Amino acid sequence: MRKTLQTLFLILLAVSAGAQITNKVTFLEGNISYSETKFKTSSSFFSSSSFVTVAKSTNINAGMGFTTSEKSAFGFTLGRISNTSSDIKFGLTRIGVFHQKFYELSEKFYFTPRLEFILGFGKSTFFDPSGGGNDTDVDNSEMLIGFLPALQYFINEKWAITALIGSISYSRLKEAASDSDAEIVTKNVDVNLNINSFRLGFQYYLMKKNK
Image 1 (cartoon, rainbow, N blue to C red):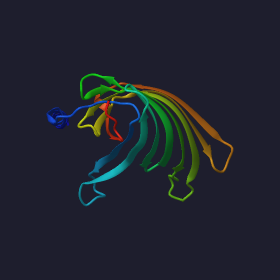
Image 2 (image 1 turned 180 degrees about the vertical axis):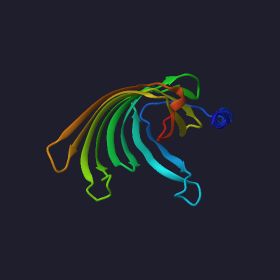
Image 3 (image 1 turned 60 degrees about the horizontal axis):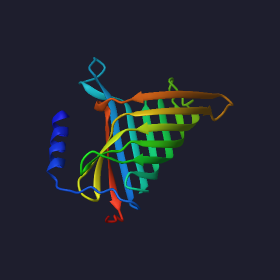
Image 4 (image 1 turned 135 degrees about the vertical axis):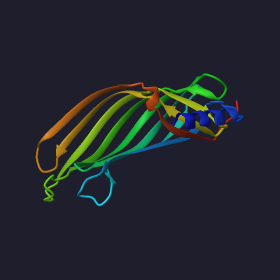
């Protein structure tokens, strides 16, 4: 993994490009992450060793932004989180707004912290452990306020690669059973600034104006 990132970084440095954030520019962005947890079985019940999937997780995000000056932008996001395991199937659709700043580190390299506000809506299904089909459906609603530090590198005037390095956020998730008045409210403050857990994305700039 480290060699791959080093190779990517060297390729980016080798590309000649000028990065000029200007006013009244529209940009599109997106990122996706996927993880799958498996364990290897090896017992007398199986004819041979095999891998069994325990859980799957997918996070897809897209957005559109508009620069209001050479150092700031605002925009809108749309995302989808899906988690599936043997116990539960969780889905959440997110819509949000954000305000982003641009701090130039070099001609093509920027520090771009972002403040965002997100609302989420979805449903969870808790599977019946006995296999009798008596699954439980729960409606979910979420509110999240987050600060996302990020680094952005311009490959050329149109394309930029963004690395989100952790987050600082407050979230409130409410789970309400569909067939009762029971509710569970979970509040969470998350501080994650681990440089080893960054998420790569992209931004594509439209209608660029020259200074």
